[in-house]
Length: 407
Image (cartoon, rainbow, N blue to C red; front, side, top):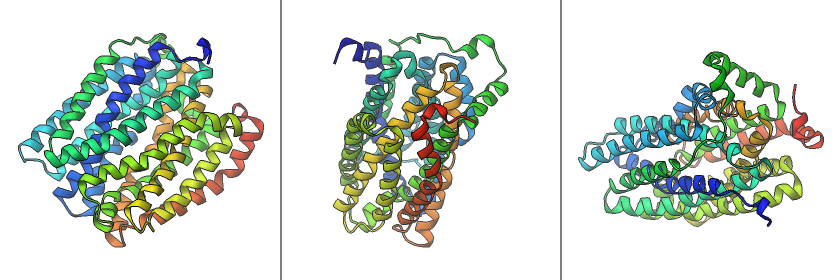
């Protein structure tokens, strides 16, 4: 690898900030459902906690996208982390005092979700300011690895272990990692100023401009809709994963984090292999294969006979999900103009993540009315139908090139 092919030092500071944050986030995401199970046995209420964390994507994605194109993306990321640290610190106090209720947990999940909307859109939009376009695929793969290691390998087992010692400890860990990550981001400065900030375009017009750009691009529009269906299905199945693991398959709370860590092996492999696979096969074929395998894996997840089979199928799902994420994020960064990237990302994430709360509620209802295993096969079948309906356009985009898919 020549010096021109190496990721710059500024990128690695951003990478370390994300890597540290992901450890605390992995612990937090793991222990929230474990805490919810101790507060209520009702899968509908447990699903409400998961739904609340994603509702902000439905409510705030579009205005946040305009905000990201108007102000420093690094500053917005830092502010979002400090905001989340304050919210989680409040949850630490409630848990330590024995005053946590399912309603408080739901409200806290919603507030954390607001911070994640700002941080998520800003972090995906800032990368082209730091990394050369030809290195975006490699940079996104490395960032996905950091996310997987933190949220999959380190965070879950550490979080579940601390949860067993004292319920407040994993929340305290999340506060610490959020603050440390925010401090690391203070060493970074944006190298370019989004044009929206200079023109002072009204926010409503700015949002419409991003929406119009995405609607006209057939490939990215289709990928956004596919993401929406697939994230709906993912949450529909996964919202009661904690019940499937602990109640059906006998996984203890301490081992639940280990289960997620084993499952994260697939995500790591996906992050390592995606750049090589896209060079060999092309971006669109990798996406099609990833969607097809994930659909089959979800059908089989509901039939898991034991925890090992469950972990293996989760690992397979994680592998192809990593492939999807790396390729689609890279495509957006390559195809969308930098001054529009925040707004287009916000519309994309609204379409892609807006149905997650409904998926969570639907999964809880299915588990309550039918069985905790039923949601996964239903979700896998829906994923198959969505892929089949979009396949002609994806084949056309592969033959003609992603840049040509514009109305």
